Length: 245
Image (cartoon, rainbow, N blue to C red; front, side, top):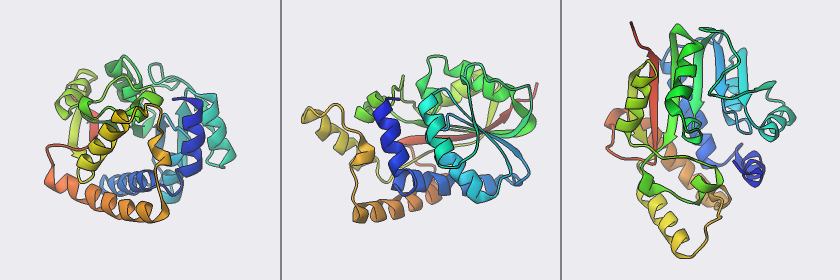
């Protein structure tokens, strides 16, 4: 991700509708999975600390963050979100089977070898642990944010599940989310491209009133998506476990 994107993310993640909504979604999901606060948790690709903020507020005591970027690590430290180790998702610096929960949220789309990255998440997860994966969906939804974030691809759910299986993981649940805003996001990105604005950071496109409205819509979205299992959405969520031999 580009340096300017880290700066903007660090500035907005505490109250921007996207980050707030994801934290609520992950918090509820982790609670529903019955993962206790004494679990050992790894957040891969911390960015500027949104998941670390959620895990701290949820009460987890044994949390490890990892990111490949020094700037992201510095932002997490400056926010007081705990120590973040430097490392690569393709070669995680941890022993086998040491984490009860692994978060790999919006990270595997950044690497060429997504199966290798998911295999590493499986390796360091305990036999009865869980891996939570989110990715951006549908290649035709590609926008300037994908370019700024240095994404390699966007996924269809079927493609992600193939990668999950190839990595030795077994899906527990899988669904698209951010489906209520799917049309508006596609339209906005189409207009941005038509206007020749190829370097627009979408996290900057906001207003307090709009932010409140989108926070409400997104919260409704992520509460209903697991129940409705919509056939589309701007993102995909998968909860996986280690596949049985």
